[in-house]
Picture 1 (cartoon, helix red, strand yellow):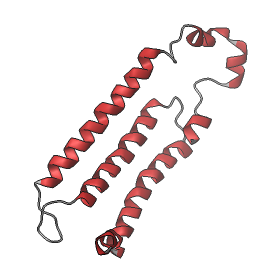
Picture 2: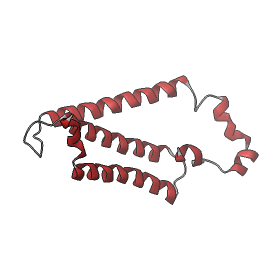
Picture 3: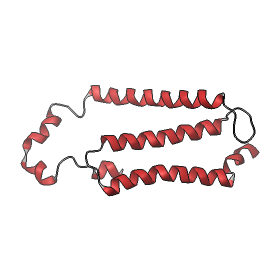
Picture 4: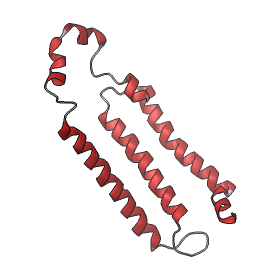
Length: 132
């Protein structure tokens, strides 16, 4: 939400005085059917890539705790972590203006995932679902 609200390609004064910046809207360069389906395909390819990497990697590798094959929780954590990193990298790559607060928000977003993951791992919260 922060990037949708505060990312600016041009200043307000420049947008009010130079009319050529509005050409991209009239020519459908930002909101076209092709760009919509390109983002849909990008999401599909990235999600398939994350799914297959997590599924094939953790199904045939031994788990650290008990020596069994990787379980669904481990696959899910890896997939969610990959989505967090990929989404923040896509936002970083697609934003027009980079400021110190915007970069800090991205770093805090990724670091908070790893912090919560560490907290859940040390408290044993992941094993609560097996008891029910």
